[in-house]
Image (cartoon, rainbow, N blue to C red; front, side, top):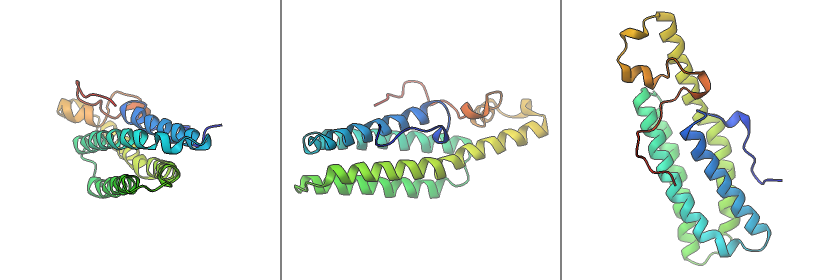
Length: 173
């Protein structure tokens, strides 16, 4: 059984945001498995580096999507992102200083942060997108919106996959 299982209530866009979240969940489970097998110290440096790089890219992309949509709580969301990155960098410093508990700490920090952040904070983005789509549908004048604004609120797409796609050419970790 996985240490941290992906669940349906964690779905945000059925696309790039969820793919990033799933990658981080996989990394948590990979680390936890290694730790359970007594190999945590052997893999923690590599996994922590992958987590930091993947998380930085994910947060940058997520914030870009939020900005494109005009998400009203973007500043607070960024504060949460910064706090999480600070936690990861603190763990990196502990690892470099020789701490032997970083693997277990990283597993816990990732599991807890991902679970809460996705289910609470990132769901706000989904709710905002759905409100925007309902408002546009009520107005009945989607054609009067600029095409980029239509894409940003996901008009014409199912509610669970209505967030805009990332710009082409963005590499994925």
